[in-house]
Length: 143
Image (cartoon, rainbow, N blue to C red; front, side):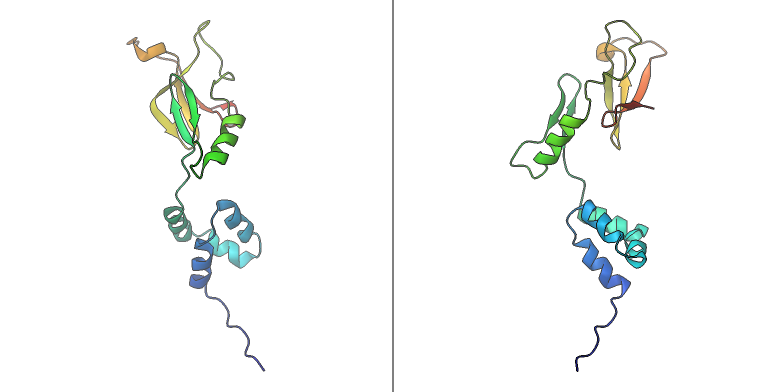
């Protein structure tokens, strides 16, 4: 008679989960049972997972030309095309304070999918106060 399979320790499960290719697969695994969820949601595990699977490069955001998605043969090209189709990088949902002046992305202020917008075209004026807006182009929302 075969001996029963020994229980997997949390460390072995972590090593298995680290080898899942996508965050979606990791999320599906975490719904399988409470123990898997506990292992997957630990900060130390998530830190290791992010180190092993860095976020994909989706494209470049330019003040003059808007969003440039990654092109094939880059592995992120399909995801980048989907983002370009879904997001509003023209910022049409942001209220315009001056007639005919669209908001512009402020230099280097992009984080976690949010963009800081500045209404000074070309940033040539040195006004003490400027109109700023933080927005999320993926959800067409301003904060």
